[in-house]
Length: 496
Ligand code: NAD
Ligand code: 6OD
Image (cartoon, rainbow, N blue to C red):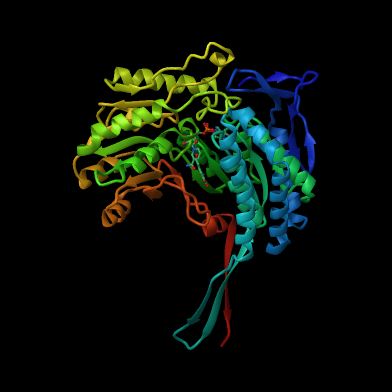
């Protein structure tokens, strides 16, 4: 971890924590750097254990002071006010997201920040219509009872989010947690603190009661993230990130038997049948492999193509991939930005080398681009396609989380389903076919939390989102979020 004493020098931005309704600094700070050219974006405060403790206590106090007793309609109003605040500063959020990630402005506008607004509006609307359950019960001795189920907030929720879709994935948890009457302490990724700080500013300006939303910055292991998940006064932890980190957090929450919701890694497959709409499938796999430089948990890194169209498909995807333009956000023609950091690029480049060692044919990419300007200091890699590896190769089984895919041929439906399911992960899959029954049949047999047929990353926020196996625990989205962020109590009443 890069951490130093003292705050920001003159003219540098200092990103502070937001605790108990106030922006507070800490003595220790670290650098937030641009992945485009390594320049300093801001200095960021690193929360120590005492700061995390203050944030959790502020949240607990706010919970007791009335947030838990507010009505769904009141909380829905607050959420819409926050969404209004994001909209009012839309371009500031876009700039923060682009500065931290180097992604194209268009993506930040249409995906990241737009979803930040939608997350708040959706859960504002859903909470108004959240309902309980009701059952009538008769006992053998003639007694008659009604059972009804009430929802209460969990209390204080710790939220830990990753860097790949910073605002989207933070607000995807903050919005339903607040909607259900919880107070939160959120820790965004140390790589992307910018939009989270703006969210705190928006929430502050909206006048949310102090302590309802708290933000702490810092690193994860043996730092702010771990202090938060270990804190005895946290009632639940919701986490998005690597499977290995999920496992570490699980150990830390075990003592308190805290509720958890985990959205973790993936090694997702795309399956293209020979009867697919060819052009749509090529375009779909291009998106599913290379969107956000492959740094989306649902990206497909394994592509299976039915043998009769295999060669044609590889050639067509190669042509489209080579037409992608890697560049910085200032370049309006750039369709793919850098990876999040040099550290992550080192990891992706190690997989580039490993693929060659394992005997892959590099169809395209497999290297870094050369710009002959400041961008050569950035964390760019070329979108990369491999063929020729067995399913057991490490680059075909391990999550790379970069702009890569391995394409392999298959001969039958049964075979491809078995190969897709032969994975430690179970997050998402996409199936490309015009055979209606086959699409549904394959979707039922694939062991992932999400299956798209002739589509990829289409989201209706009422649907359950999450994965099986190493890809996570639980589901969020729609009523599944409302369920996770609330404690249910069954009340049983004798009526006769
Ligand atoms: P990461 O696990 O390294 O970090 C995520 C967050 O956890 C960060 O805020 C980090 O500071 C914190 N953290 C790290 N160690 C911790 C610890 N011991 N205790 C508490 N907090 C800790 O993940 P990342 O590199 O930021 O994100 C990429 C990964 O996230 C990929 O594996 C990707 O598949 C996964 N992801 C999954 C989903 C999903 O919905 N399933 C969505 C996005 C990303
Ligand atoms: O769109 C969403 O709701 C969601 N949870 C996306 C996850 C993306 C992973 O990178």
